[in-house]
Length: 378
Picture 1 (tube, one colour):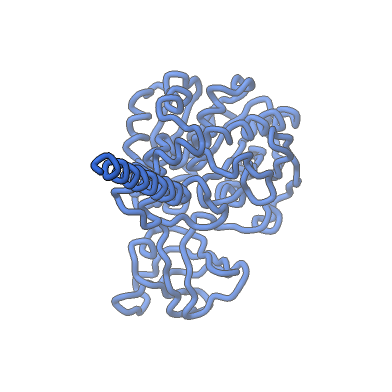
Picture 2 (cartoon, one colour):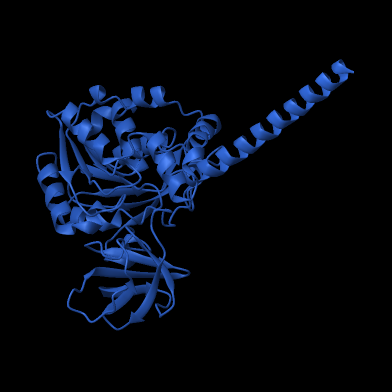
């Protein structure tokens, strides 16, 4: 009898362990989806939903929040809607729970009271011609997963800037600096990579936070060289910055890379997975499961990624643009990165800026830092 009871107990314990393991696996997959299945062009979960309370020809009243109080210029996106808002108008009449910002224009859709919106660093939509009036070519870059759509904006210099966006945005995001770069006579290649709209799907359908996507940037390097670029500056945001760092140290064409601009760089993928999972509402207790699930689903390993992005391998001047209010990519890592290579790395700090929005918070300061950095490279 005891043997039978013991066997039953053991079976029950095994079943419980199996169910617990399956639940943990499911929880980990859900928690890691925020980082591994980003929706290009959709704001990150750290960007809060806001309500439009009033609209005039040149002003919009939004829910008062730390996000809606940020300085600078942002896109305002909602369902089939995109607008551009400028700084807060401090002397505009408003209630205690609202804030008034300058309305620079409605790109498409209808901005009306009651609309739910989010701020986004992606200011422009469309292509460089429609958004900025720049001559450009729609090109296709042959990559290992297929043809990658890109925009080529020609200019006089033979130093080309390859721009690569990051989490929550598309190749439209780099248009925030494209007009400045064009005025400075730098040709620009803005790339859509695997998983983007119009680009091939990643083989496993997941983002690898730059660890595999950098090979699409390597393909863009080859394309730029075929177009006559003698020297190349890689300008990446977020995971695009991680891609740029990897390409600059591992691409067969790395000798052509003469500079890096890393905006809000993802230097520790584990921290980014945790931050995105937390912003999605995942409890703190499940965050280790999110990291383990990300490792299991993508093959990412912390030590391997750190080795491949070793700052000791850096050989070119690098401008890091980052700030302490980034909730997705820790600013402390950028500070440590800059301190470790003061001979090559310059850190430009931008306060009051969320992830990927360093230009948005201070367009003039950003472009001046970029001008100073690029002048000796072009």
